[in-house]
Length: 261
Ligand SMILES: Cc1cc2nc3c(=O)[nH]c(=O)nc-3n(C[C@H](O)[C@H](O)[C@H](O)COP(=O)(O)OP(=O)(O)OC[C@H]3O[C@@H](n4cnc5c(N)ncnc54)[C@H](O)[C@@H]3O)c2cc1C
Image 1 (cartoon, helix red, strand yellow):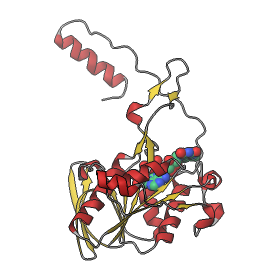
Image 2 (cartoon, protein in one colour; image 1 turned 30 degrees about the vertical axis):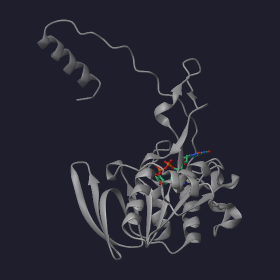
Image 3 (spheres, protein in one colour; image 1 turned 135 degrees about the horizontal axis):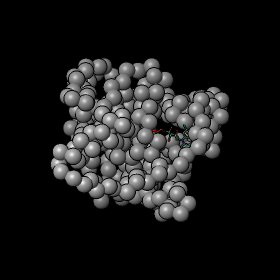
Image 4 (cartoon, helix red, strand yellow; image 1 turned 60 degrees about the vertical axis):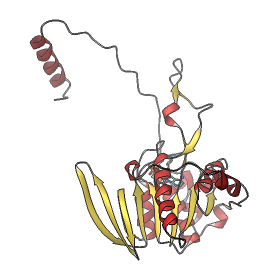
């Protein structure tokens, strides 16, 4: 079974701080990490590999040259191969152009049974890239995967809902998107780190992909970010005076004025 895991290198947004004077995000010194949902996707692929020698895992990322470091981390966890798709031509892409590029790279890898992506990247936060890749490859997709089993070419998936889950049976080739409840990703192993650093990671640019140049990057992107800004800080807290009944009456009134209730 051939599995492709789509992995994105993202800034560790838990640590992003806001410049109190300029009001902008402080990106300097912010660590880049493997997107958390993608670590869950990779872990699930590795669990399949633990149970069968017949599993080959390729991790695929589109990003700047430094994303190679994150791919080495994935190899150190146990992935077999990694590919970095990197070229200035891909820069500034929105989700549509991103998924064009990634699906072209998947076409080039070829012969896959399962494509795993994270549900969502913690920087762009759109949760669109996985489903768009499936559309462009013309294969079925199941998002919000909280558990699944594989039997031959049949995959049985529990898909997370707000108040439970639904069970879906689907045949390979299929694209799945992972949520964090799926598993706890493993650490890199010492052996894995040694072998990961000696493995070549091919870098594919625009000339290496079976894609029209007009379909990638900023120019091909149907959306444009016109402005970005840091949300204003919340106002000061306010102490309510009076009896409990008066405080509750005040709260109800205040919330209905703000259309919260
Ligand atoms: C107009 C516009 C301009 C933009 N310009 C830039 C820019 O200049 N620079 C920039 O960095 N971003 C830019 N972005 C953000 C960029 O569109 C997103 O980072 C990208 O499309 C992925 O979307 P997302 O982060 O919301 O991923 P999601 O859809 O939330 O990701 C879901 C899953 O898809 C997979 N995935 C997503 N992206 C990748 C990837 N690159 N490689 C491998 N797997 C992936 C992962 O498995 C991930 O968990 C721009 C966005 C817009 C709308």
